[in-house]
Image 1 (cartoon, rainbow, N blue to C red):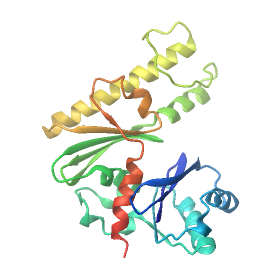
Image 2 (image 1 turned 180 degrees about the horizontal axis):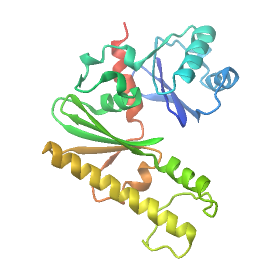
Image 3 (image 1 turned 180 degrees about the vertical axis):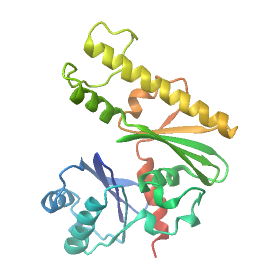
Length: 248
């Protein structure tokens, strides 16, 4: 049995994986204001003391949070987790960009799908909206656009007459009030952004791609863009599971 985790700016996901590489337990919690007490509380839900955990691996874009979780796992459960970028990933994937500037969550996503025959674009609706490009077994780089949720929140904070709004699909492009106008702008604006960036990547590389979408708003946009996509909510975890084999 192994433990893997994805520590993002918005949320943290930690999973227990059995010998068949299946997720048997998953916890998700807010990454903000994390501290030792909260880490202990969340990890206790996994009931780790009664399980034989051989290895642990995390991808993290929040070093402080990973440090807290790592120290708790070592101190309380005698589990030493690794960070994805500390492993020799070149054994699994070729990376043609500056390794130090790629988020380990994006690398985990790439590992979750990479093979020697297909090309992929991975679209992740996280704190940022990211597009990662894989041509066969090579990571070629990507595109980072503003995140949907953070952009929506920023608009509400900066514009005093615009309330906090939950994003949803709108049938009409022209809003009849402030809320419907903002929803239309964000929904159809991001739908257009997604299709445009994917088309530009295809034009630039002169290749076809399988497009994988994941993250918070992936389900909302899945059937509302012109591009055919495959929804995979656990792609990051699958990438971590694949990389666990590199731990010596």
